[in-house]
Image (tube, rainbow, N blue to C red; front, side, top):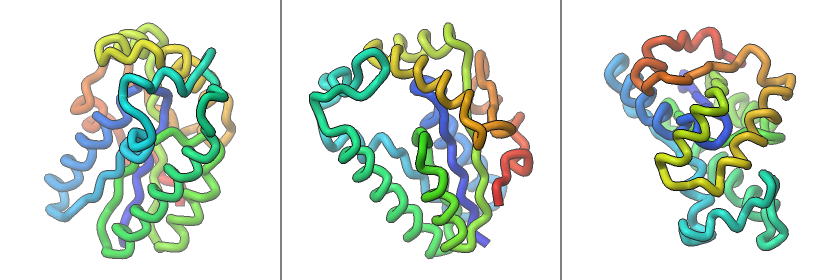
Length: 184
């Protein structure tokens, strides 16, 4: 049975780095192909990297772009791509922020008969800010802090948090027990 691992969390929490490391871990452990989907890849197609800051004002989407349309496109691409990979029997690791899209992800897992694991990475505020500054994306700090608060308050996230503050991706992968994050 194929498995779907979804890694959510605020900007700067290390979703992409963790997803890549976790996929390598699965390949080493089980010697099978794992398909990794970085949701930001679809997002990046809409703008040049230096314009990313224009998407957010005070941590919320700006009116300069039609954020809802971009988000819908991103999610359609993520779901379609994951469905194809799961249909081929591959495990899939996705990293992207889940805000209101959990029903779509659950429906995907159910439709594909996949086991679904959901991990919400978190880091303390200082760590998030430091990571974002290191990657040179300082305009995303407000968005990261907004998402950290929002994700912490969402009922469906309770029991799915993993604090990776001051941990490398390798350390986090070693410490995570996937069964603890199983949804269905």
